[in-house]
Length: 325
Image 1: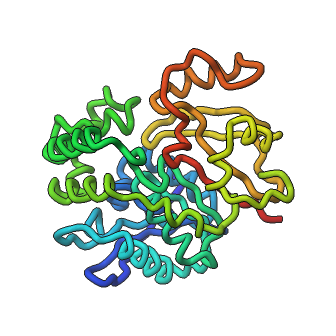
Image 2: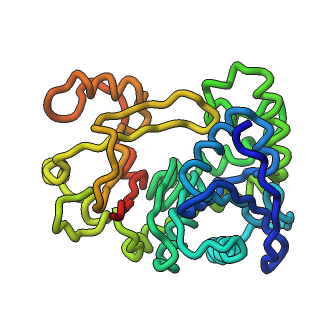
């Protein structure tokens, strides 16, 4: 293995200890945890180790288990978003991280944005992976929210059992791998219990931090002189938004647990200093490979004939980053 499993360390939080690990060298990168994980057990699965090795090549990478989950101390109930932000500050302080690039995964998106808004001097950039101001679609109709609420308890009851559906949704390429399914069941049980999972899901469904996005000042390559915020830019009509981006950059997407990398378009370079605006324009519900194949055959305008809803960025899948000289 290229990376030695880092020491598991603990930071004293308000209501218990927070577990964290750190490895690599260079600029600080902080991984903000998803719904539930276990950083110690994650090192047992080869695909996850390969991902961690890549993270360690980005710089000095820090990840942690949020309060009540994984290797952090367990507690009844779940911490508020404000408490999660302060837990994140406590961990980064203990790890000697003064300023970092933040990588928010899934349910970690709102915490990442809140931290960036509260402590802008400690953030180089924000990267959101399957994340945004909310993990769920914004402003769902009451009947949709009711369907979610009815489904949550069943999802929690199956957590850590052979019938757990989570691997089918999160790592479909491994769904037929029985060894992986057995490991995933054990991993789920090591992250949190069923009641805690239900509490986390219900909190996630109710979370919406769009109001703080205007306060996230860590910049995202736009034309020189463009000063409008990312929140303003995503509301522009498509023709105006398209006119802003003369050079399309390379974007690589890789789902957790999968070795397959989906490469979009561009020249592969993000090295020119400036602000970059990154958004997922793939339609909600569309097959990424089908969409990108259709895009490659389309000379002008968006691909036609690809099923799906509005682009993912309308539900918060956008980010901005800055490349310094």
